[in-house]
Length: 255
Image (cartoon, rainbow, N blue to C red; front, side, top):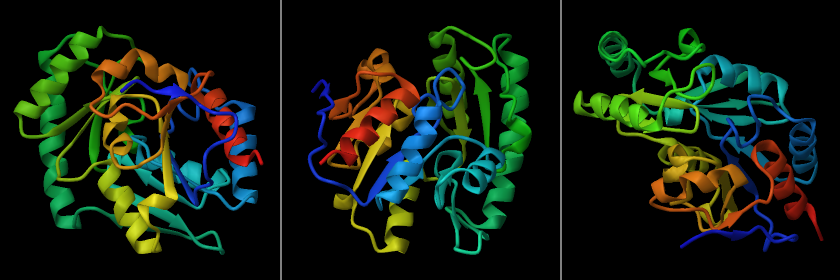
């Protein structure tokens, strides 16, 4: 089923708004002023925004310390971070430390294999800030054909890893978790029901989240990827990226 345009007034008001980050809160690599204002307005209204992202641990640390958010799910579900009222951070991981350490060694070997085997493969600029996954740049600082991105992803899957292609990266990890499973783990810890949450995203890497909530929203730039999604969003905004997120926030805050 194809998404329908986002209504001016959103049907119902959630307690939690899960959202992707890259090209959902940002647009063309930048965070629009409208997006930051939307995040602040939602927080003041009592709607908790929880980014669920493939971004590195380093980026997640920066976001939760500087944005008007108090929780974030990072590295495609590897962990979530909460910030308490004193500003201190706590990490909860999907896998035990010993398992993560063994997986990290396997991932480093695979990264070297991919970079040596595929001349069009480039690691992301933030790879040094990742703690549990490897990522390849396909449309951020480098641009490669999407079919080549899927070739790399399949090679990683054949090596026994999980690989997801987003609008800008290929994220590769080892472990039975994803964005949705860890978002649900966080909800359980918070005592929040999935019926009280919605999700906004922009790419096939968000498929597990689109399939996990009754109400979902894609920003406009999701449309080229609709055929790649097993579970397309219910609604789509008129504007792309962070501008579309601001549109969603306005709909949620309308009376």
